[in-house]
Length: 150
Image 1: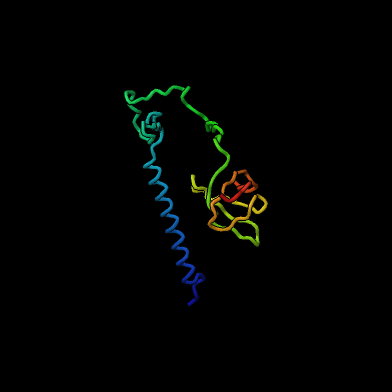
Image 2: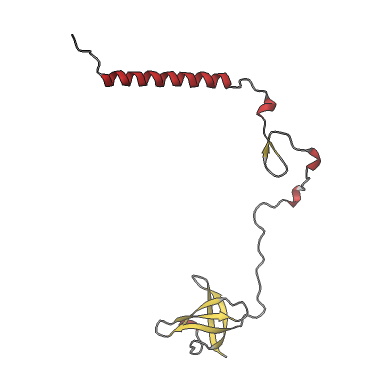
């Protein structure tokens, strides 16, 4: 008796391949049967309703809102420069390091913390002092200058 040329695993692999091929062919036929060819233009249209949602029905013309084209602003409106009445502000020194020569002053009106450098001092200050100062824009933001004790 002669041995079979194909081993058992080869036969199993061939069966799996044929089954996979058959399944693929069945899925293809099913897709073709369920396909809706030649849809009308109305069936393919999508509409946007008054809330911005996509729907298959056209929007109600009674709910249409008329917008005046002059009212539409593209971009951001220019901001007017804020002019301060008095350049002299009052505040309290919250932190000051004498060895490094910088600190922070809390503005009493806006509660904003403003950086102060030793170069901007008129008189010596320490933490807790009430001071008057002017604000100028520094490299990294607002900086207190002409700082003096009250």
